[in-house]
Length: 239
Image (tube, rainbow, N blue to C red; front, top):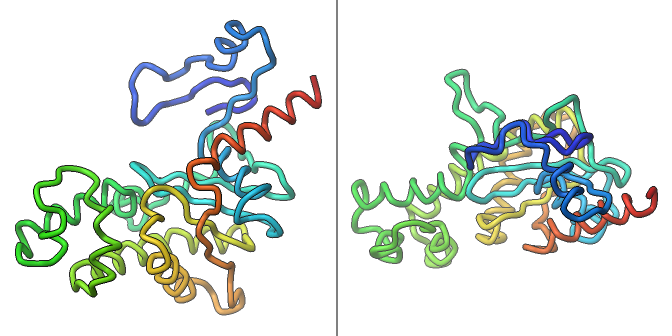
């Protein structure tokens, strides 16, 4: 997304939007000033100004959904790097072979890990909980963790370590005071938050100890629209 022009550079999920001037199109339809940004940036702004990031600076927000997105707010403003993107934590590589954070830590990635248990660990509690479900298997992870399921704990720890390793680069480069976990996968709750925070300590240089707080996002599904309203407020103030 080119936030200055409102032009989409590339869509990773839906074909046909590349190079589309979304901002101009919306302004023509509405006859009003338009500001365009991506959902992760907007969600970060919402959390920084009205959610779990209030009182912290800088604020880094990661959303764990079908993909993995991220945003950074510094001094109450979205950090925008050179065109076309910024804070793309989901595409940070975990190794030289090209494995990225999104391929290991997104909701879809965790769903796939759980589905594989049907073949490798068919008698596990997690497999019994998901039953014939096809999609969204990660929603059963919290319940399996409550019941101390071995495979659920293994998947949680693997995901938390991969996520923490990716986030360690954010810490070393940007030194946020807080890292907020949002998106559907974050609904696993305290077990995920605590595992990420603990693993992150091990991947961060000792001079930065104790490092940023890791907290659950506070606004839930409202984070993106709240951030969008703040962007609209800024446009209105300069119109």
